[in-house]
Amino acid sequence: MSGVWVFNPKGVMRQAESSGSRRKSLVYLPTGQVVSSYSALEQILTGLGWERYYGGGPDLFQFHKHSSNDLISLPKDFSKFNSVYMYDIVIKNPNVFHVKDI
Image (cartoon, rainbow, N blue to C red):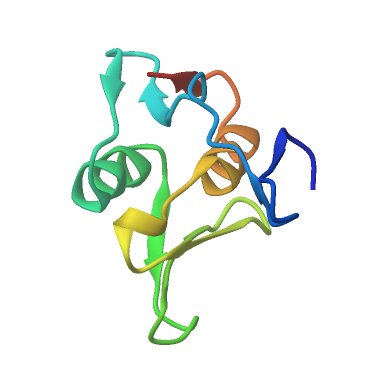
């Protein structure tokens, strides 16, 4: 667990909030659009040849591309869509997406 740890006089410690930490966003490079919902992401991915895949279970939102063995798995709850999922999309769609600090 990296970061700054704060100790109080009673010996209790906690990790300090990082005031400089920024939220990450997925950007669709051709238009500069920040992906702010799964409906927007689905529209972009469909245009790139990805299709919805319904075999992943109730907590997953997935896409499959017939021309590859790749599968993009995302949490159904968009609030849990974080940089790990964003970078997975970037790797599987080179030169199309970028992860940016906002």
